[in-house]
Structures are given as C-alpha cells and as structure tokens.
Image 1 (cartoon, one colour):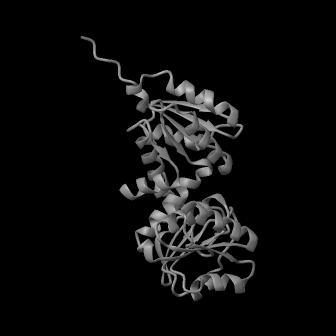
Image 2: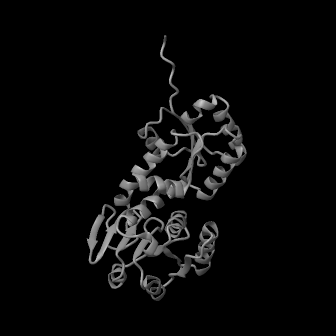
Image 3: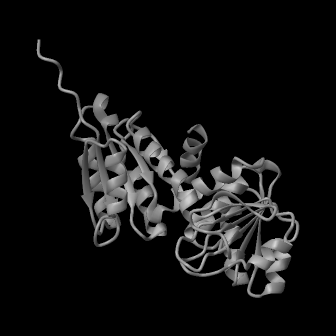
Amino acid sequence: MAEKHRKQPILIQLDTDPQPSSFDSVVAIDAGVGSLLSFSQVALDQVQSLVHGAIFTRGTQDLRHTAIFIGGSDVDVGDQILRRVCASFLGPLSVSVMVDANGANTTAAAAVHVANRHMNLESVRALVLAGTGPVGRRTARLLAGRGAKVRLASRSAQRAADAANKVNEFLGSDLTIPYATADLSQLRAALDDIDLVIAAGAAGIELLPAAELHDATGVKVAIDLNAVPPSGIENVKATDQAVQLGTTTVYGAVGVGITKMKIHKAAIASLFERHDLVLDAEEIFEIACRL
C-alpha cells in the first residue's frame, strides 16, 4: 500500500505593508515551514476570505498543518487583523495564528525573558523608557503581567498616562504608572529606586546618558533595544550580552536579538502542533520561558 501523503506545513503570511517582510519570510522558512504564502497590503475587509481559504481546503484532522502569521509595520492594524482573523473562524474550523507586527511581540518577549534570567520579576521595580511605542507598551504589559511594578516613561506626560492606562486596563491591574522624562530632573525621578531599565525607543535616539545610569546605583539590569547609533543607553553596545557596566548587567539590541530569533522560530514551529493556538505577546512570552 502506498504511504499516505503527509500534509506539508503551510504558513499564510498576512502583511499590511506594500511588500511582505523578507525578515519574517526567512525566519518562517528557517523554522521549518514547508510552503509560505505571502500576501501584502492586506486590508481588514480581505481577511475573512483569506481565512476561509485556509480553513475550507483541508479536513479538520489536517488543519494543524496550516497556520497564519500577521506582520507589517503598523502594530495597531496588526492587532485589528488578529481580531478579524479569530472572528472569521467557524467553531472547530480554525488554524493557529501568530501576530508579530513590527517584531513588537517577539522583541518585548525577548527583553523580558532576558531580564527574567537575572531577577524575580514579581519583586522588580522596572522603568520602560519610550514606553508609549509598540515595543514599550508590550514590554510594560509583560512585566506588569508578571507582577513587576512598572514605570512607563515618555517625554510627554499625557502620552505616558494614556499608554499606562491601556496597560492597566488590559491587565485589570494598577501596577503600571506613567512618568514624564522630558528633562534630566524628571529622568532622575523616574530612575529613583529602580532595579531594571529597558529602553524601547526609536532608532538613533539616546534616552539614558551613561552618567545617569552610573548614578542610579540600584539598577541591576539595563537593556537597550536600539541597534542604530547612538545607543538608547549611552555606552551600551548593540552586541553586549550580559556585560558588566559598573554594577549593572547590560544587554544591547543584538544581544537580545539572539534570544528574539530563538523565540520567533519556536513560536512559528509551535503553530503546527495544534489548529487553535492564538499567539499574542503573552503566549509568545510563555514560549520563551519554555525554551
């Protein structure tokens, strides 16, 4: 008897940008995806037909061999597409789905996982610089979700308050507090009595001068997620990985990126274990903890 044909894993890449991310495509292939179907400029009103094409073409016993990845540079639109994807499933007719628009979820998961190697997050006092951006918000969410007391910082007090409120509302907690860091006096106040600093700012913007980190003697771990000079945290090199800078253990973007890549590949691979996984920031972080 001829051997039964084995269904190969198919990943459907939904990207909101004019061109699908080559980064996401390469990682998917390296994670073992058999076939990659990439769609660009995906709009909300196109999602249902794309999902139905995924769930109606294979029998229910084979749906775990198909999965959906949501990417693109707009994180808020990516979240909307995730909700539309899940709303398009029909009971048991579903496939696993992962959202990582702009790499925000895997980057935040990697940063928090790296911090977790050095400290108990439940007792940590953390400062997230540039916390109103997509990576910053998710980093704050993951930290507070583990019980950390989080100061979410921005140069704009109003933006910090809005982002902190969203994190607290999502988690149903009050562990995230907004801080303005428009000048050095405000930055020093935000750093007071802090154990962990994560800089999640845009490329090429310095958020924390070396002298301020040096004077913040309680900071045990500092993580800079900016790989483009100048560093987000002065004197932290992109390649730093558990390097001692005075009394602080520091990581640069490339140092964290090694962990991010492992998490990304593991998350993609896990999509094909079941047909009903939904991987957002929290689920991706759980995968990181199991690595």
